[in-house]
Amino acid sequence: MNESQANVSAALNVARTLAGAAAGGAAGYFAFGWLVGQGFYALALPGVLLGLGGGFCALRPTRALAVICGVAAAGLGVVSEWRHFPFIADKSFVYFVTHLSNLRPLTWIMIALGTAAGAWFVWRGGRTQPPKNIPPPAQ
Image 1 (spheres, rainbow, N blue to C red):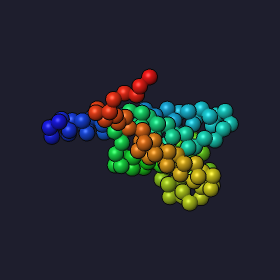
Image 2 (image 1 turned 90 degrees about the vertical axis):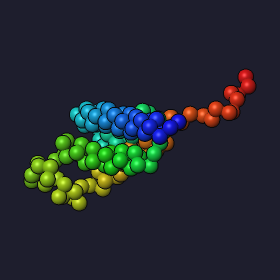
Image 3 (image 1 turned 180 degrees about the horizontal axis):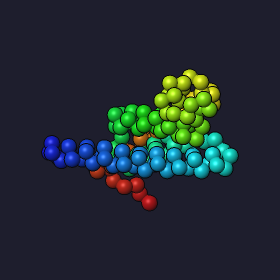
Image 4 (image 1 turned 30 degrees about the horizontal axis):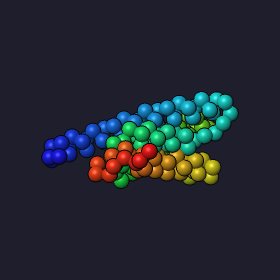
């Protein structure tokens, strides 16, 4: 494979991973909202589905994409919490971000789980090709 093919392949990997992560994150955000309406609190879900979507669509795992998806999962967790449970004193996003230290410990645990899952699934989810010189298993 020459250098231009490698660049196209790398760009395709990034595009596929980020598109899958965006789709999974959107699904997780709306699923979290639906579950809140049903009385459940699953704040890790947006980050988990972001990671699953990115990992499913990744051609091969890279540390950089795992870090990007982990950061995106953390941000999505904060935004999801703000949209469904804003502070009573001021419902603005700026106020919410400046008072993140007032969140409950369970909220931080859920955001951390979603962040870890968002990075982990992208890091471990790439579709790597098996080596071509190994014969298939005997039946």
